Image (cartoon, rainbow over all chains, first blue to last red; front, side, top):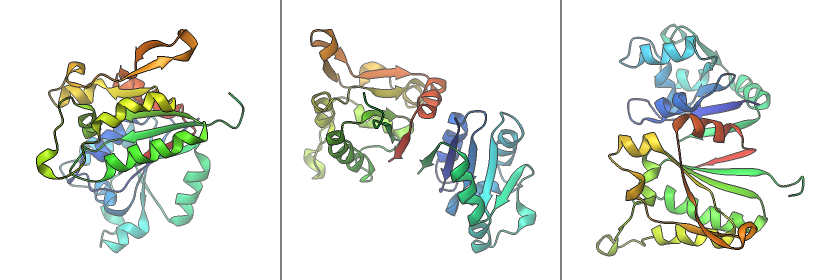
Length: 104
Length: 136
């Protein structure tokens, strides 16, 4: 039994991403969407924290490509360990997990 | 409980009056209570501010909905999980929260507290045990 967590706010504006990561369990997935995609970029004040979550803890960290593209963030800016998915990948994640939790 | 009963968790992470989320969550809980599901509420991050004692909205022109939490027991909503770390980060303790009681029909209608203080790790387990999580 596992959970897909979605985060749609910038981690520089709210604590939603940090709270999400603190409540995710091994086997869960965290998908950054909408303004949440700013959390997937390298070279920020939060990169180390998010990269650490992506490396350890058995949590898959994903980012929605179309929301990155819309904001002018190219694939080269994505943090190591974060997997970029398209809308079909979003659907796959929703289907693979038992529940979805939105961190608004 | 029959097989068609699902576990619903209402996840509350917003303070009460700055946005409409908290009031809307409470409205949905009260409506949803009519459907005989297994309902519980979680309060974490700024959501813990929803349950503080002594709220007085007379001078801001909006309804003080905090007393409504005390009616949830009558709708068989008897589990309000509050995250300890979220309280502590905000300088709050369980004593700062209003008393919310329910009558336990399985225990000769004894009055019991609805608020259950849980750790962050326990909150993660509670989320993981649900069929449906509704976020506000």
